[in-house]
Image (cartoon, rainbow, N blue to C red; front, side, top):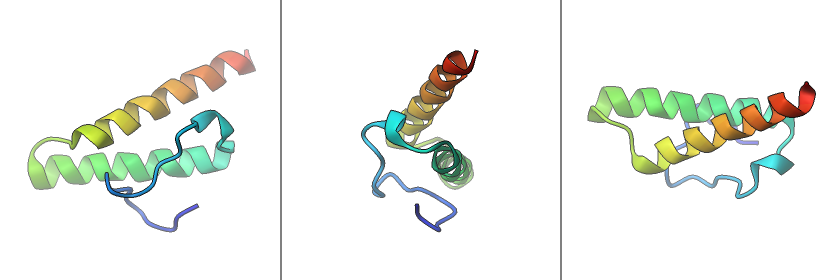
Amino acid sequence: MSEKLHLTPADAFPEDLSTVADKDLQILDSQVQRQLDHEYVADGEPNPETEFRHFDLDEEFSERDKRDD
C-alpha cells in the first residue's frame, strides 16, 4: 500500500475493494478523505473521481459491517 497521505484522482485505485484487506482499506479511506479535504480547501469542491472513490469506500465498509453482524 502506498505511503502517500493523499490519493489523487490520477493515482491507482483498486477496482474490487472486496479483495482489499481491512487494514489497507482503512489506509485507503484515510488517503481519500485527506484528498477530499485538500480539494475542498484548495478548489472549493471535490474532484468527481475523489467523490466516487469516497462513495465506493463507504459502500464497502457498509458491506463489511453487514457481514460482521
